[in-house]
Image 1 (spheres, helix red, strand yellow):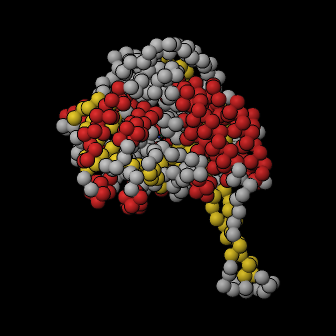
Image 2 (cartoon, rainbow, N blue to C red):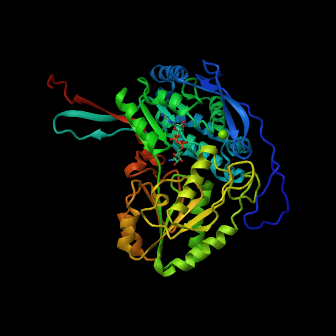
Image 3 (cartoon, rainbow, N blue to C red):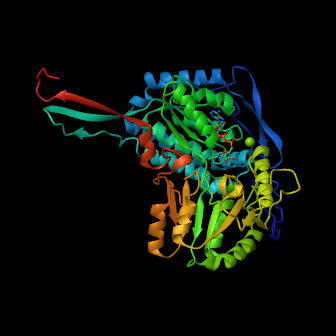
Length: 507
Ligand code: NAI
Ligand code: MG
């Protein structure tokens, strides 16, 4: 796939690659087990963020296509085998699906690279095998879904049944197209639901490939449908649909609010929202500065900062502040930006023009509001949406770059004195997705981790994800959890069944 070169890496030199673009096989909507054109016949362009060129014209689904997908999913749920199969059968088919993902690892990895500008090597070791593992994790749960026997206060026998919620609409973002697909589809299929997936318009390619693999694995027609298209059309049609029983959404807080409103004004479907973040990464005086500076940098530059749990507010205790920011700058210089197919590259292009411009405008605001630009801050003067790793220091809590989600390779460093102070400041945000705490002091770690209002707290690590680790937000970062058995349960509902123990005719 790649052309390996023996170039020496210099600070922020741009790394080229001459990788071959994979053939794009699936460009149509996947409804009821078939690839079909949009009813309108419309297509939209999928752009390669490395080159700004069109890589494919994808079927543009809209409301009427969503209607067809929902009809197929509804029938598959109400009448089809999937929810009625013994769990072990769903498990068997899902395990086959996971194996097929592994078998197509390189092609899937390349699709996410050309669609999202994600690192090819990272997709190969993390995103794609991770998606297969997520499907396996939930496959393993498919035959362990059960209710409880209840202890009644009268002569009644009662139990609960754990039943699938029905047809689920999944609206997913572009930053982790494969991970998100598996995190949403895995537990809902294991629960016995049928699904309509709308991938982000920036990254439709891998979802369509997954649909094809799902069919090959034996997932029955209508159970998994993928409708590509835009958010305000196809996405909105999902959220307001009267025949969709639940929506699981990951994306911006702004659209999360629309999703909830649409659910409220249609059939009151439950929603699960995983939204933005402005996560604190807190560094106490007692840490190994070299190691933690590395981790802090990863915390914001990984996936070019397009990750909702990015450690975008780095709070550094005053005793090590000066030393720490010197280390950050030194390390940022070794961070290689370039074509995401190149094996030495650590940061590819931002996903699209809109995101690229949004990030650059935040960098501008940071400078104007008086933060000190320690490193980077410029776009690369070339085709593609490449931006330098950027570090602002002497940032204060009131600055826009300390408050709003940038979703790019832009770190804000803030200085603090005491534990009490940093807890208050770390919590001083509308978001509550993640937090990092770096210290060897157990008391400090315990105190801070219990005081931070965030859905996931990492102590002396960051991005420590696991299929068994529930993941989601507090406050305006949303509610509902992906991963863990928690996420299986959100696609299940409880039915209580009661009957007299003796055949007595009383209520
Ligand atoms: P977005 O929230 O617009 O897009 C996410 C998904 O929602 C896409 O599939 C999109 O088509 C769909 N969508 C958009 N409008 C919709 C509507 N009215 N009804 C139903 N679905 C709709 O996010 P966007 O514009 O791509 O990115 C904007 C910002 O959102 C980013 O800069 C970042 O701050 C944040 N974001 C957060 C993510 C996370 O992982 N929590 C992922 C993506 C974006
Ligand atoms: Mg794209």
